[in-house]
Image (cartoon, rainbow, N blue to C red; front, side, top):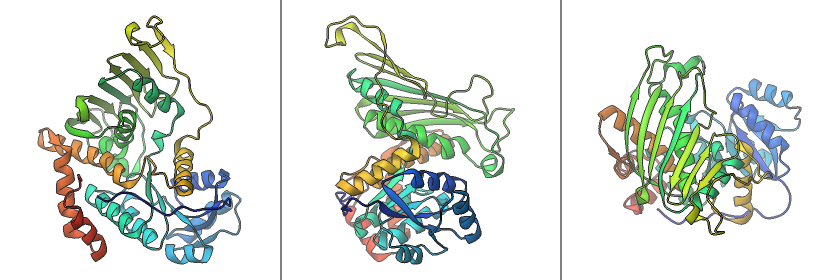
Length: 378
């Protein structure tokens, strides 16, 4: 893969943004875009124009250009960037259209339905020269950042665990999905552990099952053991039909390292217990509450803030597509392991996806870029 670079947007005026998608999550993004002083929502694209107009009316917005065609709306509104809030199946075509219209994109997770499409989008970002960043909103918690900082001070990490137990009755498509927990939710925790460790996964062994009382058609519970670079193990255990004693939506976390342990309930401040010899101040070990920076934007507002900062400075954001593909690869590898009963190497998933991406890519320039990689692991 090529080194990441993209144009910087100068000046001090708000960045002009077109949003694609006006559904439920689209309404959340309209609110966040409207509240940010760093951007201006100038266009809204949706196949249902009436729904888009209603969303704008509910937000009290006027003068925003509405249409069904991204390129037309972006041109008419003189947009400088795109926020993609479409369904996952539409992520690839919308992102490609925006990138080759000369517009950087902030896209809702997942980058695409498959790792192969994710790799194709990474190549498209290279060819177009534009930034494609994926909004993994659960990276953006002040307390998670504090957890990461605390863990980094404890030296070599041995094991990280996440317990995720919720019992949502969504209705609709989720209750009919295959691999519903892994595909629709676990990517949040998988991405968060990559952020926490600042390393990429090597392999996974995963088992899925569906409790007898489950209201889901597909497996709603899973346990996965990942090996990361350096030998750290990450153990994820979760269920979406777990009434009683539910965890937060971020899950309940614990990490053990050479210098002690950190615990985070997914919402409040992390708690650290250090081994006395590991404390550089020479003070005894013990449980302490972490210091938390209260000034950072969180969730999708945090993703937007990092996207804007990247466009202003040229600094590559943490959710840039080349890196984010590894989070989706963790999901595909876990599903494959569960389906086959075997341990799966992440590199094998990426290599197979790469072959598929080259084989199926319709754009000659993007296919040429993919072929020049030689491997997705370069």
